[in-house]
Image (cartoon, rainbow, N blue to C red; front, side):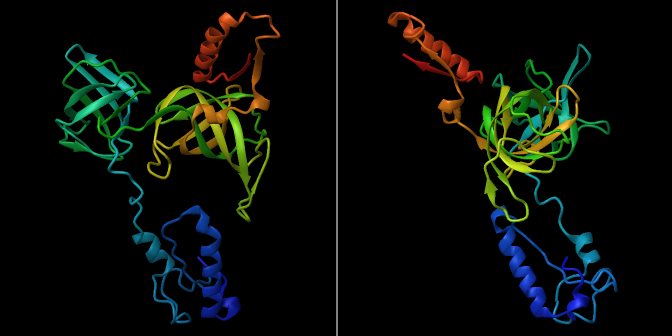
Length: 319
């Protein structure tokens, strides 16, 4: 809404200039659809009804727009993701997996895969409080029963075998810091994504974004309400999509393990190769020659360090 148009006499040229400048400013954000409405909140022009003082404006008034704007176009109905919230077993004859359909559509008879086990089965029934359904889609909360006995726990995910999410422990995300206490990159956090909770650490802050100018700057921490691009390593593998493709599986919160405060919210960009996260000046280093380690043991030590790197502990080895 372009407010206070009464101060410029509802000049169309002023409105067009503001719209043009704003669209140029937000272009890097990749927002697909922006609607601009000229109005005067003081006099009510274009707020509830169209104003006679803007005959050049052919769009809807603010209230009509808000009442008719589609709000479900950002839902993903293509990639089926079902984070398991609860395993329901009231008796020996029933075993179902309860949760909210995060994205995609699931139907009776569809083949699904459980992650991380990668075991497959077919959907036997889709159960709700009001009765069984033939299909389920976002944002329905349902219980799925399968034709086969598969060991699935809370935090795991049901997907379709031909459409898998990214499965990794290393990723980068845009992070909005929400805690009054400044970010401590040496602290481990709880990361909650869908129904999955794990430990996570901040490996690197690539840059901070100035929300007023969109300029990027190098920082070593974030403060309240600051936004930055951050690289993470989690204690176990997560199943995620980019936030751009799937807002439900591409978002997460960081929780302070001491205060239980929500420290930040994040939007996943993509996975990161663990090798690309290694910075020589930030790694613990083993100099095998200085430690007097025989050359015959070098390969074994390198293999151990490679395994530690997969677990999020990066060590530089010098022979």
